[in-house]
Image (tube, one colour):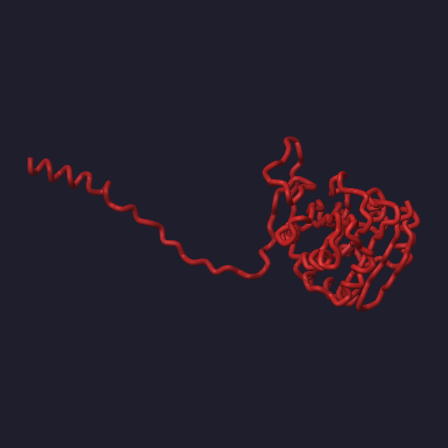
Length: 255
């Protein structure tokens, strides 16, 4: 019996030994913007909607998340651009390709009835939504390059009758001035103001072209090209400034 008892205890002994735990090595977080990611997303999906709720039969497009952080700095001419929008508490505002700092400045300047932000970057939209939950955020599919980025049809039709539109970074949208204004004409109310601006003007654009060529698809529109585009979409030029330190164009919708 002694021998049997010894053999059983030896046989079961490994079962009661603690299982070795894996050793985890600490990871150092990189504070820089994450490397470009390839994501799958249904087109025109609102940030407020769960990403899992993709209807059957909807095509899934691959998109590349790019680094738009070079636009984060607030410029000295931002108050002038906001003033050009003539905001009021009843304003219904669309901001195309905005930064989080622009949205914060806009809401600080004047509360509005509705603020919709449309951008090709989910990273930027996530930052806006985190800071200002009341902002409705929508993804612009295509991401420029003439593939549809910047066309406001990405915003659901229930959001319309905009009386102020801020086009915050036209060179990165991948559309012509005529295509942009045709798109906006379908969603603006009569008398709406469209403000196309770039703080630091062509001076900053030259730097962006050197440092971020993958995000620039067009130049800032000239006065003549904007006037030609405006004539075909029932817009009228109200103000135009094209200087090295500021680009600002204000158009009024006459439709």
